[in-house]
Amino acid sequence: MDVPERANCHASLLWQLVEDLHVRYAHERSVRLCPGAVLANRLLLTLSKAELGEGPREAILPICRRLSMPAAALDAVERQLAAAKFIHFGFEENRHGCLFKLYLEFGFNPQAPGKEVLLHRAFKWEVGGGGLVETKYVWYPGLSVAAIEERLQHVYRGTGPSLETACAIVRLAGARAKHDLSYLEVNEEANARRSFDLNVYDVGLRIQDLEPWLRAMCDQFGIAWHDFAPLYDAIHERRFGHLAGGTHRGGEDFFNLYYGVEWREAKGRTVRTGWDKGAMKRLETTTDQDQYYNYCWWPYLPVAPTENKWRAESLLRHSFEAAGLDERAGLLVETIQQDIGRFRTVWGVKWLPAQPTPSDLPAGAAVGGRLGWEYYFYDYQRRQRTVSITRVLETIRALLPCGVRVNENLPYFMFSLDISAELLSGDKRLDVVHMYLGNPGSKVSSGVAYAMTETGHTLENFYFFFDAQRDLREAAEKLYCSSHVDADLIDVDRLLIPELRDCHTICIANKQKNDTVYFSGVNVDQFIFFLKMLHYPREIIEFVEDNRGKLDHLLYDVGFDFVARGADVQYVKSGYYGVF
Image 1 (cartoon, helix red, strand yellow):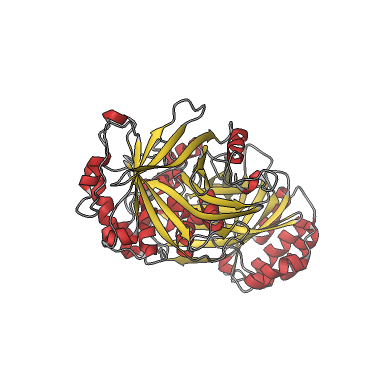
Image 2: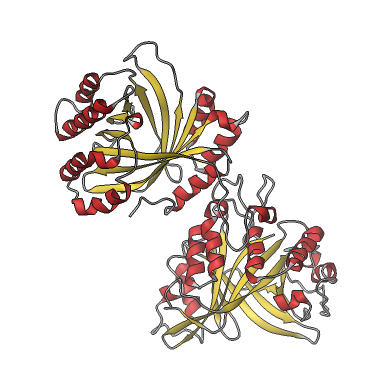
């Protein structure tokens, strides 16, 4: 067992943001021992401000914003960044949640041994931007072992097993030291924290040299050694760096062990299925002029900072890669964009399994099938529209000729085109346009879809939109008003998936051969859950997981077509949506 590197999505995000700076950085791990717990998912990433060149502010502040640093801390960092020599970004996963941290290290040269020097100012906040704490690290340079022990008695208020352990480790380090031990004390004005930090990297100790005292810590905190041993076995040969301890802000006794610091050259994260750094130009990067719309072309605000992120279009282009399409897929997108503009078209990536997939199939199980696409064009001006079926078909005629003719006097507000590999290769003609009209008289937002062909039109689907929080009961009632669903045999949670219904809007669609449930406004983690639940190709899932930090500012719309035969629910098609 080793400490988790990027198992936590928030830690992975921090790591990616630092790597995206393309400068050397140091990586250090740590583990906290406290009453009843071993907390090992902790890391520190260190940057030398000198390596950031002439723009450290432009490098550091966007990362702070991206991590939702509270405004008060952001203002303080902006004021004090000029004086810092090093910047340390930290992450920790504790028993109650996750924290991000930023340390400014000032690096003063002391005038006299023992003189107090403010070496670090740190800002620590809960993931999501809450619970800000400011921490000061005061350095006492040049202290002897005896002087450090005297300071530790002050920290621990005189006596106790933690004091004895800390002093024993100080004596161990002092007996080997070729350089002065670096001793700091830590305080937070808003609480009762009293702790210390002892840097012994120069001493040359290994974690295994501390085994007797690690066993004492486990005994003191009620941790069985066999629970700590897998971690110990993985790290015992690592270089021991810091010991921190004392009373934490919540009044809890603790020890932190920092170890194994190493400098790394920054690398871009390896992206699967051929989307390496050489192909990154094909991934659409956000700008401050971007617009954000859901699958109904209703606007929304991004849910995280947008700097240095990817547009939703990148997911579409990656699906082309995953399906093995050639450049004509991208050319069609660019042709449409050139005519009606960016962020004007909604796309859907569809997963069509080779056969209906049982809903109880374990997530992650491979399912054969193929990808398809659908492009949706909205213009709510209806008869006064500027984006019409006739206009778009004319725009793409050289790539996708179509013989469908439409009465543009009809009050449709949206239409869509099915796109397939066969269509793009020229092996098949575009022979149907899906037209969507309103449904006046419905108590909820509602629409009706028709299939328009060269020979006529056919009624296809009815759509009903419900507020996911306010109208959940009504959505369930609508779901059960169907010839496909028996309420006595199928629990509503099997269709209104609990992990997905924390969203903005739920849409229930009645189609000719099945029904459909759509969840609009899910976040990136819900999106990943959906991809796994519906058994999308592994390369699709891994692309989103690997690049979560580039995609977490977006909201996603997802849905699945299902058939229910008695108590058996099966998925026949699913899709996820964005705009280009």
